[in-house]
Amino acid sequence: MQLQFKVELKIKPIEWLNGKIKFINVVKLPHKLEYVVTDDLERLAKAIENLEIRGAPAIGVAAALGLAMVAYNSKARSVDSLRDEVEKAANRLRKTRPTAVNLFWAIDRMLRKLREYRGKDVNELKRILVDEALKIMSEDIEANIRMGFIGAELVDDGDTILTHCNTGALATAGFGTALGVIRAAVLQGKRIKVIATETRPLLQGARLTVWELLSEGIPVTLITDSMVGYIMSKGLVDKVFVGADRILLSGHVANKIGTYTIAVLAKEHKIPFYVVAPTSTIDPVSKEIPIEERDPNEVRTVLGEIYITPRNVPVYNPAFDITPPEYITAIITEKGIARPPYEKSLRKLLGLK
Ligand code: MRU
Image (tube, rainbow, N blue to C red):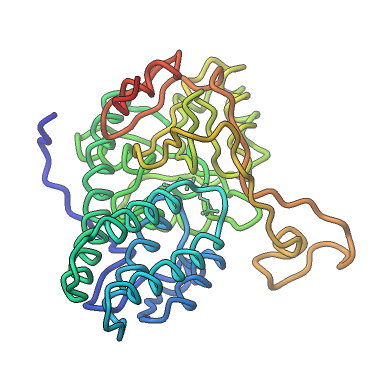
């Protein structure tokens, strides 16, 4: 597909600065646009754990750049000891978050480069790893723009689109997935309105999606998560676009907690429900998806600051849920649109038998 529009990336969430990584600490948004620059792997791992860097594609890109950073700054004098250092860093990064498959996909891609190198030149291997990480980052931006315009074909002028969590530039290397579709539709001149869910408990919708859309002048209205059914019953939503953290070949989609509820409500109200994700989010191997459980205080408090419950209330805090394929109208990727039955269409997109 030829892109007819020049896309300007207004938000650069993560950058490579010759051995250092610069990223937006999204925990501080919308009140403060704070950049962190680091060459410390543990700082980066903590940033992923604490959601300073979050969103499946962004986590993958950060992990790849993290391994490149370790290699670039290594004092190793042999290829074997460089390999040991990078493998150790990869093991640390694997432990940061369990659900988004992009993390493991990016780490495995970096480790393939590391392991297949047969030479003895440490500097050459360092260059290979940095190049691969930069490729992962630029491919993510390209994939987002591509699937943004593919998905925009499903958007009509005048549509009101409901989205959940944050799938924008801040969740990727740039442009966004589901929010990328909205951006692309706006670039095509379509008049779009967005309804953003707050996304309890960490409020990625209220803090990040709203910030991104307001700063680009795209009309957005914020609702709490529990309002979705009511506004759908009132006919106020034309389409739903969400992102994904892991997609199985069966078409089961893990995404931010609350997505499943929205999908069921969309089906009940005959509203198309679209998932937008790069093919790096498709897990061609697993049959099950590990769901991250996070700190109970995320639910007991508002952003760790003010307790809104008795301090000792037991809490269950799964960060993601799984939407079964029967609720999903289509899955939009940079390689095209998959429709049910997903086992067949996703395999075809990935070039698998
Ligand atoms: O816990 P988070 O903020 O990392 O969760 C993010 C999401 O669930 C997003 O919807 C998903 O990663 C798609 S982002 C392009």
